[in-house]
Image 1 (cartoon, rainbow, N blue to C red):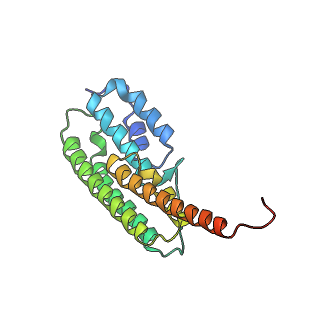
Image 2 (image 1 turned 90 degrees about the vertical axis):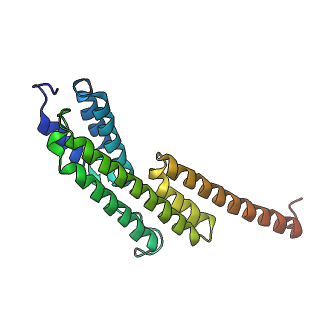
Image 3 (image 1 turned 135 degrees about the horizontal axis):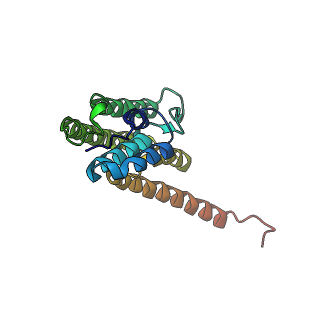
Length: 193
């Protein structure tokens, strides 16, 4: 059972407001000894998801990355990812008062809903990443998209798709490098021997 010395409002504010990941992790560690181990893992998972899906950076909302024009399918896809994640986080917000009460099973039920929502969010990330690469024409575009999606790579399913896209960019780069070598060998500039 929870210690009477816990300040529930403090941990709740750390779990559900925008703040730095370091502050969130510190708050979670502070209460680790007083909560069941599984509940602490749940809170750690929520903090990890916040950093990966919600674009919070040091307590502030990071802007949607802008690749190409601001109205690109990629930008709208990234915003949709965030909306889906916010929706699944809402199920936990509804039972925020039970986070520190291990005897209340409503937390477990809503946490399971949250996990299902995270799976849906991961599926959406994979789809948006695949769609973004459908239009990639250059190594530069590929690297820019990889940069945008790097924040999702701690999720294993997404990392596998991401690594496939790295391979695609590498092959494109290697093909371009081969073309340059061939061009230089055929058009060897005079005076460079």
